[in-house]
Image 1 (spheres, one colour):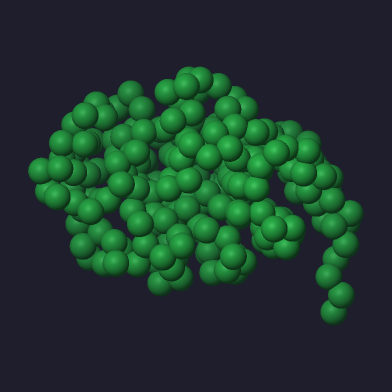
Image 2: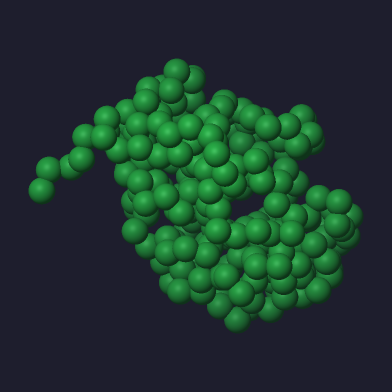
Length: 220
C-alpha cells in the first residue's frame, strides 16, 4: 500500500516555534518545537493549557515546510499530548526521514510502542500530586530503550517518595535516564535537590531553562 501523501495528512497545531530546549538531556540546544493541540489529561500543575483546544489545522507538508525555515536539526514534538492525534506518528516519521534529530514529549498515558524507533521518547510518569497518576500506562516502560527518557514532576515530598519507590519497583534507571523536576510554585527546587542527594538517587535534577530565561511565555 502506498503511503498517504503529506499534502493529504493534517494535524491540529497549537504553535510552531524556535527556542532553546528547556528540559531533558537536550537542554540548551536550539530546537524547533511543534506543539500539537489536545490532551486527554488535566494535570494539576499543567503549564500548557493553551494547547488543549482550538488552533489551526495544517497539512503535514505545511508543517514540514515551516520547520525547515528554522536553522536547527533538533525538533521536539510536544503538546498537550501529541499522541492523541493519530497523524502524530506520520509527523514523527516524516521528520526523521528528513534527517532531523527528533524527540517526543508524551504524558505516558498512551501507547508509545508505535513511535518510530529513531525518535527519542521523553515520557512522563504522573506522580499522585498531578491528579492523573491513575492514567500511567505502565506497559510503556517495557518499550523504553537507553535513547528514551522518563520525566517525573514532583509537587511534594510524597510525590518524591512515590517516584523513588516506582523507580526501584520497575528498575527504570536501568532502562533509560530519569529526570526529576520540581513543580513550579509547589515545592522549593532546593528541597528536591537535597532529597536526591540525601538518597544518592542516580537521576538528573532539572529546572525548566526556558522559564528561567523567559518565564512561562507562550512560544518560548
